[in-house]
Length: 371
Image 1 (tube, rainbow, N blue to C red):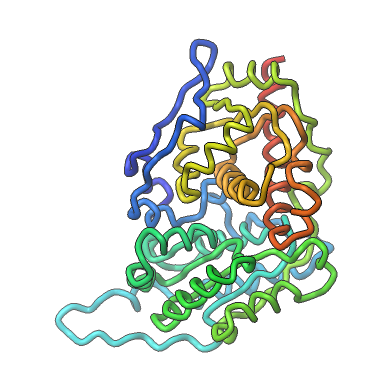
Image 2: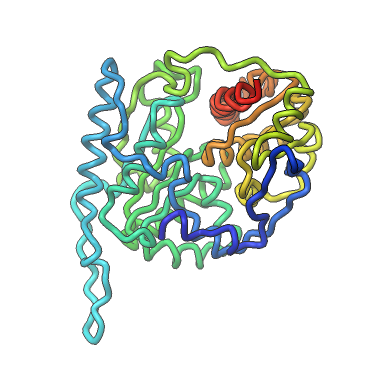
């Protein structure tokens, strides 16, 4: 299974859209796709942004030796997971479960924003010598959505057939979901599945060594012995040595680009926030099928925490798909209030700001093309 096997046609979701001088942009607010459970499973692969990443395409910061060390350790971990032969069923004779390899069955990538943890996690997925359908890759939110769609026992049965499960952006904010996923991971470890996970050190704790690792290992309790924490230091590569993100544009510019650019969407930001409350977050990816640029007018600070968390999920899906975001109104670093940025979900909000800023920078070329 590759990302190309999970075709949008497998779901009741919008197909590719067209735009340009003779067309009109689509409105994301007009889309409320239904995504069947089998698509959720089929799409548990690295997102399009990370289709081509490998360990040798990761460029370590020469001032951060932990990055080079991480590549070496993860490449060895992938190689130690073996090939397909051990996992194939031998018909007409008793199946003998292969002995678990010595050492931890999981790695945890501990580090701040933009140090390349997702790049390394996806590289691990690609490097693991197993058929694509025996490897799974998804965010913590996507994993909890899968449990909701399939039920706990069916999720265990489905993922137990895998050799590796990669979980990006492991969340420690919701005790209920953390216990749910920890229980799931325990079942998978018992079934011989190798695990890899990332999470983020909180912005105010970047200098405190293993803060995130300690939190992670404490929250997964009995699974701690199965994980080797791997510290990755560095600064956010998305903004390393790059100019400041472009300021918001005026409404006329955003609307003009939306009508000119092929595959663009156009929405008023308040309307989009309202629409997100009516679509389950597991469907946000399908809602963006075929969209090549997102144009938003009237960006403003989000009004409450629930709305903010939904926007974080949308930002993640757009970033995964490398969809530029062109906007008018307030800059993206003013989306979340000081109270939100200092609260329990602050790591999500800082991640969203970082990713939306990168996508806003990508959108500048859309404006330049029309000048």
